[in-house]
Length: 297
Image (cartoon, rainbow, N blue to C red; front, side, top):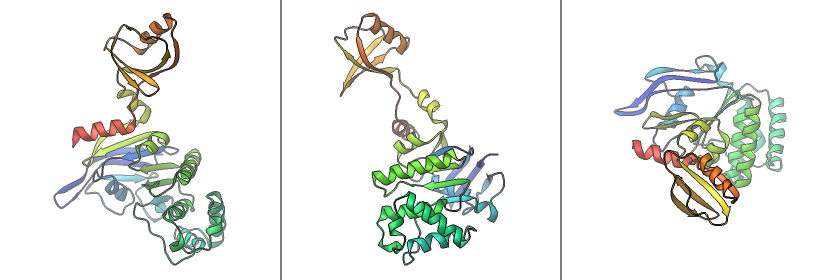
């Protein structure tokens, strides 16, 4: 059973098409990146998945069924616009919001203490939400998102406002949740986090699918015909190399269309060169993103 199955959904507001015939699926036990520039249709797509907005056409299936109240209790949603009760104590806020998802008070308090301890926030359990820093508030919001043990997590900009320590903490917790078989959807502008965490991605622009699939396969598809080389000695002429760029700590060799990286490596080894690094150049997800969005905008 798929965690999410979106089939040919479309949504317009007045004369503006926000989502245009979009289809994708997310498997259980998968970290899935939903990426695109501002105004691409990411948040509208998420709101249709959450049944906050109804699609004009197409359909959305969550955990094998149309979204209903029971299914909603198996979801964890972290919206980009955060919302906690500022005057409530941390522990009371978590317990109350957990109760709305069907968790009894005793279990909610017990689980809240466990998660507060795991995130280093236990000492703040009796503080009011308004007394917390933005980053601490973000961690509490994440705890609220997962306290009812959802099978599907949908996180909109989960790393916004977090310092590097809490970013690493959150990434570790997300990896644990995925390893427990939960599906995690990350919608974020931080391409480096998507690249590090996600198995597959969907890149949308102007409401349409631009790139969709396995992240490693997408990166391989965009791989240029060049290699990164760190070596000792004189490089000299290398058959099939059409150009060289010197970077800090390594040299990039551009190859002609007939020459493979393996042929270059074999040639260098045959000349007895000491090679410390030899790597086929693969563009970052950010570079792919800029290239695709620039092409379509």
